[in-house]
Length: 80
Image 1 (cartoon, one colour):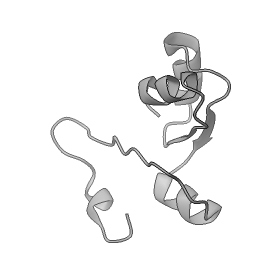
Image 2 (tube, one colour; image 1 turned 180 degrees about the vertical axis):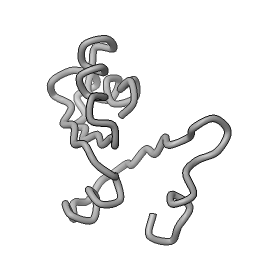
Image 3 (cartoon, helix red, strand yellow; image 1 turned 120 degrees about the horizontal axis):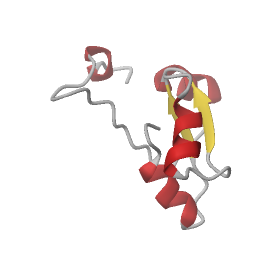
């Protein structure tokens, strides 16, 4: 989710958006400071776990997990 720029843009085009972030306060920040609409569903947790538990099908998954110039090692696994 982060600041919610991509989810916000998709939602404004009428696309249903589910967002996941591991940081507990990020949804509040995205809504209060970056205009994330209430129509964007936000779940706090590890996206791999959330996707596995939901078992849902998605048309598009955007992964932005970079910190600096690299992403966390566990996101380069077969499971991910």
